[in-house]
Image 1 (tube, rainbow, N blue to C red):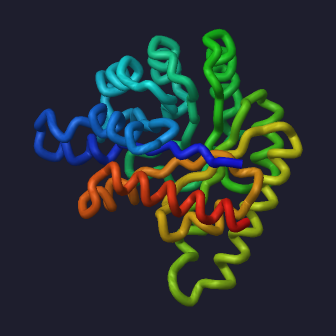
Image 2: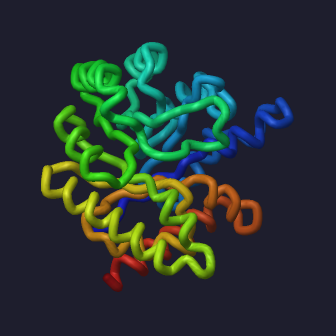
Length: 247
């Protein structure tokens, strides 16, 4: 089965905002990713607007010809924005202002009421709902009980374990991701994966059959400095297809 590749363009906006210019334009970057074969675009609208801004999401919604996945916290303000913009998918993620990037999965039990409100809105607007969670059995089961269509498994711990000398930890984390993915698939949930993935480490994740989508951003933008964004997307796609075909 082919794997959907969604490119997160947040850090194009990070570069733009660092100098207060209008460039590089995250919408142009998104269109370039689409032209290079990306199946969708992911953007995280954070509370502090450190990279993607409201107008970026509005422009993305108008300009994209593929799929818009809006990452956001389960807050009243974000729910209202998503209801107005109507992305194709909403992915609820944890968010803390002091973090550099999203660390760990959503605490589904603690945010149950807020998630339920988002699910109700998404159902009214025919928006697909996804939860970004740790690869843990309880989180998978509760996500299913809340009526979402998809989960995205946090792959950060696996990526940390890709360092030299961490083979045992890497195998253990891959096994944990595999168990969570298989459980989710058995419950009828779509399974995505993301966080820290690169063209160099994505292969073993692609060997986990239930995973049908990956969301990858930072490594693509980093590769784009040297390769150009189109070639960065194409090389990532090749790494994904090569690993999936050899499974």
